[in-house]
Length: 170
Image 1: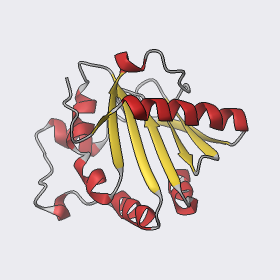
Image 2: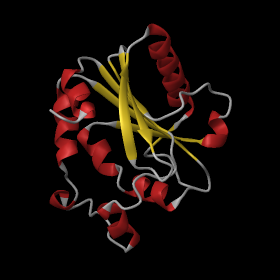
Image 3: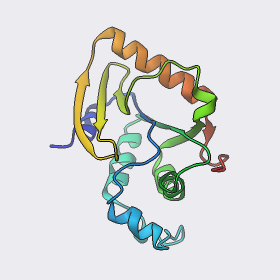
Image 4: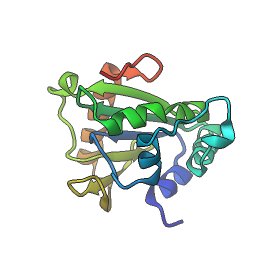
């Protein structure tokens, strides 16, 4: 397996958490461009939105792994965040729990400097981005202080965040 996120999910036994803190990612993503041009997913037509990653979510949650994603967003939200919000229902349908936290409500939470995944509360995969949101590197970390920072930050964000079904992008 060459994707470290997929590797982490394949090995996870209890939990996988994902913290996203950028207001835009990969501006050249064909799906984002299609969305900007009016493409919308049809909730009634699963074949129009089911993608390979969702099979991984179903398999992972089916093994009893709790998958939680928290997104810290600026408000008013960017077009990219509107897009993410619009295409999140398939993640939820696949078994992932998703919450949204306006950046203003996260101002007093000590946060890691970049987006991340944490698996089983013991290993962290940091993702480093260019200024425009392209992935430039990833790094695994497992030092207890790093894991504690990430765990504490994620749980604080999760506690304050609004479930996907209740969040309304401003």
